[in-house]
Length: 220
Image (tube, rainbow, N blue to C red; front, side, top):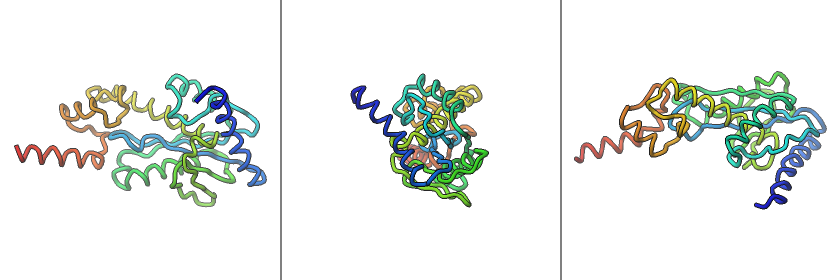
């Protein structure tokens, strides 16, 4: 994408939010997104952000399209300029108990409920959305590429989870979490083979892997 098209896309993120606010007839519009549904280890994070109408934060985009350096810069700027923001999580224990999708929805609900102000509408990235009593919530497929509010939430959630995984890397140095953030990379599986699973690994995510290994060992 060339620079002109890229700038147009970023402008459209704010236009999307403004159109939704116009439909609402005022009130607070909140975007929410999660980070960490796919990894084999660690909590799942979510953020909720209410942006101030008319305030443009340059560079906001889907967190997956941004460099780590850019996300880190935006993290502080979003918190400084937003009307309200909150970051929340759901634990590995909760992921194992209720499944990852429900845990991600729980983290989003916690983020929205922790804002300190009540939004008129919450728009959530994806085709599922959390149930928040007394609050209207709509799902927006690929919302992190359409809405500035959701994109801002995606940045906060991603940076917060990455920082958390760096803390886990210090606590569990054998797994090199600082390199793969818990995702199922070749290195991560090598560390699992060498050290076994840690307290923060999602065993439900590893079941097929260990079943396959047990089958191979039995056949050999």
